[in-house]
Image (cartoon, rainbow, N blue to C red):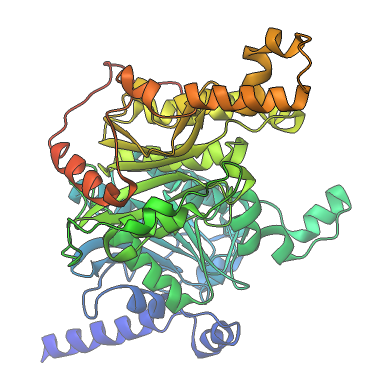
Length: 518
């Protein structure tokens, strides 16, 4: 009989813990168009797989009357489960309890599952919906945040870390998601900022709304803080599942290989004609990517930030690959400050987690001008160079059209340990484009008085330069390009190259760590 009472007591207490902040607060959460912490866990994890830790943990604060309210979970749900059968660790902030604010006990719960994730080799997913630090706890709350930051840093590159912003994320709380590998947000319902609109107005006299200051659209297109944005939470959860499907559990493993049913030897004749005859005409590089990848699937990241470079995941013969591509459709595909940082961070993530890199190159150079120079294009461009040079995963570059100047060097050229460099017949590889180069190389001829119209003479000399240098054959003669291929066969060549490189072993000199030009 005694055990029956204990079991009943246990069940009652767990029911109490699972009720969050109560029906009224749950209804308020729903009224905002947001789900509760437990509903979110249920949406993301496989049914019945969630195992919760520290359900009975409570805060230890005795100031400001806090000892009178000590709800179970203390405002964050933690534990583990599976996504499509694969282990993940998860924490979900509960806005219905103290507004999801963080205490020392709360942070201990998060740090525990982060330690377990690193020790077992499984991703960490954080569901953020919090008013920030619990003011009543003072420095203990700040210590709690910092403990989490430290774990984020120590486990960076050990296991994938993914942050979902599903409500407010403000103040110091923003730095934990910022350290993680991917940040995902919902439109109109989630936001991130260091200081809120009231403080901004007081300090700078700026009138700005929450959405203008830290909404998903701002961070997706202007700041680059977020990688993926969805219209609602169910769509976001599906996005997380797809993202995880491309990633390994930890740095100790290779990414999963899935059967896609797309033939290895599939050629696409449309690729032979996809590059415009006019070298100054744009095209969408994603059309190239989708014609090559398994089932034309491409999972793009940071789609609306630095549009002149494209990053994302795909599969080739079922194997996960990371793709970096210049985008001629936007700013002619030049590399600027934002593009450099976007691509460098993506390259380093792929290298951390054994994901081979495929580079589609069509780049006229780095963006000129005082705005770029003052913004640090030298330092930022060096980040991309550093990332490709440091990466030891298989790296395969396809030069589609332009590969000019320093941008040719940076985009995983042979000289940066690019394993395979292929070119289409349309490739143009030179120090600079014919338009500018002809005026320099043929300066004396242009200055000669020979009765020929200067404009007509310049056009002829541009053609001469293009014939000599704006093609892949000079580079191929020197061994800087491994092969010039028929565009239609790009998929076949990539898959063969990946298979050949599957056992590649490369390393960097022994050291504590490098000093990337941040």
